[in-house]
Length: 397
Image (cartoon, rainbow, N blue to C red; front, top):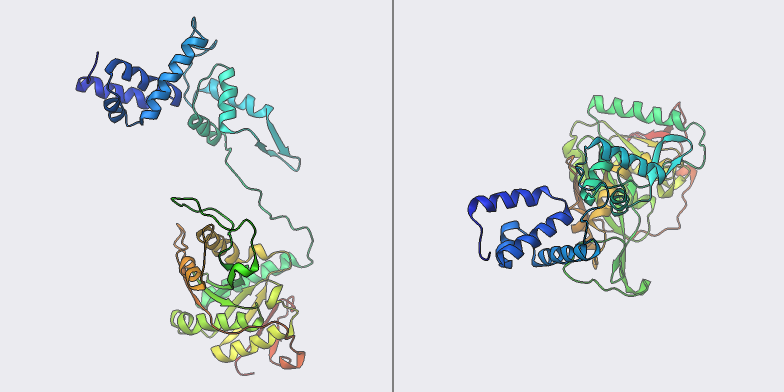
């Protein structure tokens, strides 16, 4: 037979093709081509490429040579549906033979087998299934691709849990009165220029960078500082250049307040700021407390500071609600100017409605200044609970 099939046959062939596994579907396409003799017609009918049809023909030929008297392994031809109890039982047996586990959590196991490996092992047991069916089996048995999360603190911090309770209590208090709660932090410096960047991105051609990164190829070092308005799920990223200093952090917060914050919270009498315990906003630094005094005066409201304990920065909301999504949108490719970085950062979003506003923060910030206790003493008031991490300032001081 050559030419085209009748309409009823076409519909039946299309349904049958969609019901087959990957390999059987290719061979079916090849057999239809042998019947029709019209390659373009078969490709159009089944929605496949010429390459798929030819591969199906090759597989049919190879199988006839390797197994002239038998087309299947012993036990072949069983239902290859992912919800087949016998298939699932065999799958579990294979996984149990190729898993490792956590001695502290025996219910958690992981395997180094790929989907292709599992399909091959199941074929040895008489089940011919596709990698897509293996994916369904894995999902049905709660196996998902997971990355090791760096959540175990290597050091025990005294009063850690008590400080978390203090932060949560303060957040609820501020939320109940309608006063702003912001989470802030400085993201790692981003190199702007011709050097190759970490990560991958979609491109219609090869992206070639230097085989080694050199500082001379960077036109600037961008320092993104973030303010995350928890209530409104809105992040504001101010990108500066130079050093990360206490002055840079406070100027970033002031830029947000003057452009957005005082409009979103016109009745605010106070603000709660959540920060890490180290870096330029360390609770130990005199200069940071001096800058908090300036912040309260320029904002005209009370400023309350609460630091996350040491080695607990990953619990700072901006870390896991904002920065991970920004890292995704700027990964790979070249970022040649600070303006280009700002534009990319603004595109970050999530299914939960995160919005990101980014802009440049002008200023020449140089490290080296240490500050003095007398510059803030008498203005900063410490809390009754864990005062080293909890303090504030009123604009009247």
